[in-house]
Image 1: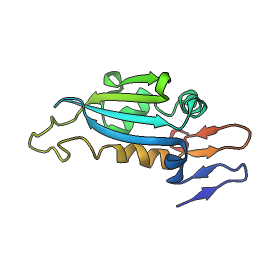
Image 2 (image 1 turned 90 degrees about the horizontal axis):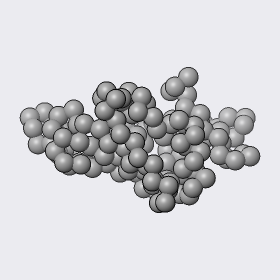
Image 3 (image 1 turned 60 degrees about the vertical axis):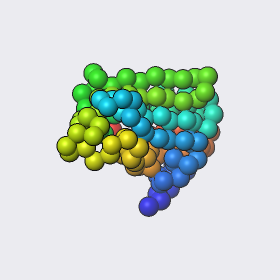
Length: 131
């Protein structure tokens, strides 16, 4: 679903394709999950970071983990963020539904699709899920 407000803010899956070159998830060993976000350029990375979209609290809320256990690494040289946190179930254990962690990025893409993003007068980002 696409929504466009009077201020030009857009909410849709295109938020991911317009502002990121790659969003992926993977195991970081059997007990940790890593999310990698590669932005299209430095101004886009800076806009998302300054908007507070990817905080430990938000990631904890999305993935059901303690925010104190969420690690976020800003990789400015390659316009990327790396986010790591403990898997709720160790890889390969009974109850694990994604042994490689490769499907977990979808939660993040859904959240990004729901952001209100405007390119008018510079990149402006609002997360309606956070009030």
